[in-house]
Image (cartoon, rainbow, N blue to C red; front, side, top):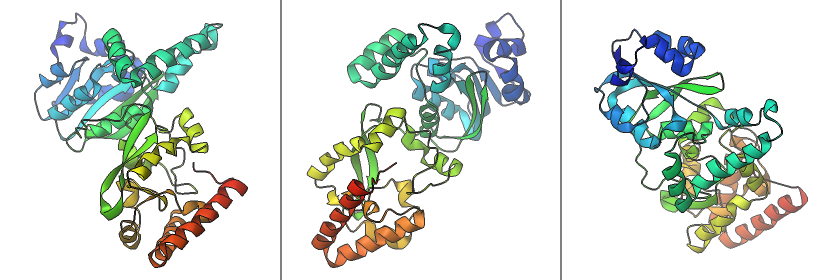
Length: 355
């Protein structure tokens, strides 16, 4: 095992140092078995430049610091990726938002626990999502003790070329093992604020940016494959127990508030009022070849045929969309008028909603 200079500078045994940083339980359950590996690097770093100083083609990197305290988090994860061999593993930890909430509003901290929690949400969750406030926030905090949802933490890892292979909840923190599977995705314009632009398959198979209000935690878009592997589809073709959706996001979806910005796509001519739902590439790949070919012949729509038929399974959704698209090919105008009134009837009288 190789130890960084930071660990060499400590006047204590390396195993004891690790236990002090992460605790005995986490040491035994997550770290101990890896310490005898020759190409394993243990570091206690918050800066990506120190990671870039490590040797290349390592089989494993263990960082003892929380992701919550790293200022330039994606740069740090990209640096870790660059020092691992293909298939190499990164072991780390973070405090997930719900664990943070439980810690702050612990009953023993009454009567001000909920006041403190509200202040924490305003300062550490809301402020960093607005451009000017974000610069001030990180200028003051240097990124220390940032709020991280599980979706954002894992989404950042996936965007930086990793996949999650193990996860453990230990003493209020989430420990993970992530395997390097590819090079990082360098998104110059990451989606972080309340108004987002999602890449969706449009007419002729071109990717369009669909405007929506955020209903998922930041970086959730990179977790499509992870969610598909871990969760099953529920009625209506959505994922069951999708932890990427925030509490406010569930409210937005219930009243379609999240879809209001899609009017921008309508005015830009990228979408029409009635049509199949714009899909991510991952969802699009789940569909049959026949449906894929028919889908890209026309623009996606704001009101999908889903609301006319209310299908429950993926097979029923495919059948519903094929039915609509075949009818649209023969009579575009009358088909859209008919489906508009069918959708309105389901929404008004049957209470149809999108999850």
